[in-house]
Length: 445
Image (cartoon, rainbow, N blue to C red; front, side):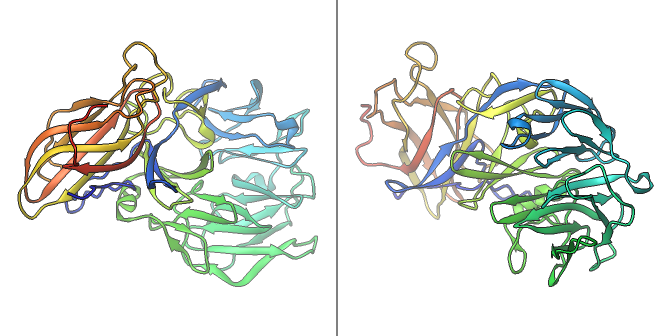
């Protein structure tokens, strides 16, 4: 029997009761030796605790105050572990910076920190500020609930002249977000997206680029993200798009279904070695698009329906800031899951199910994880009912010929066979292939 297909991208579709293909805390990548392989994500490791939390925004850049870390924890603003001041608002938090000034806020007033003092910015009419960007010496402010945006004096985010504003012109919609893409301002409204280029005119430093408008808005503030030389956003229709000559949808029906079922939405970026992942956070799940492969996976914390890490890898409940490292997640269990299967038109007797996987690399020489286990359960009715879990070993350290094989699985017939795998041992794990009725079954080493 040929190798079984395994879910390389996460897929869940409630409509039609389609079989789920979860890919939790794992992702696929190209391998010259094995083609496509599935790798384990890294777990969450604490690097700092800042305030009471939750961590709502984080900024740390070379050239910005010596690379110090700026954080909004709850409604408190910190430089490293030093409390700088408090901000007001319950909106999406932001921190942007030039090399001499940091601007932050969360839906009400915008605040400025220059390394010495911290103060609310006197904004025209005392209006709320939804989001802020910085480019070419200017801070760009979105006035809450309107299509207006303001620009600061050059190099001075605290100076905003009431007459230094413009209006997004294509649609009479409110601006929810702003990005800077290759020096171009991208204004995202509820109904449309406009692109404004530099003019060189100090009275109005940016002007709309003609015939460069997307008639597809953004679903909420905090749902757009620049990645390299393009950007992604969650549209008002709950579809995730990538910038191009025309918007290109990158989310499938399952992702869109999750997005439409959620009341809240966020989009942000994290990196794991050469992989850049676009994290799309909903009320109950965080789906991640690998920018390189364009495959989706899901990040999840053990015992929770969602991932506890949010924008900037800050905790969604307390003041912990996380990094990605190792396979012990937030000090606890790091569960990785995936599925494989095949349709069947007749009857098949499955004598063995063999995984070509990472073996013999456990870092534990004694104890429970000396020979870590991987578990499997099967379904004969497209994932509606499941057998009990059973486990086989990935081998002790140095057992590089360990055969990972489940045996005597019995008879399967229409509609097919579906296998669910989980790995909870705190060790690295890689999967290259899954084969049913592999030849030479039975050798253990």
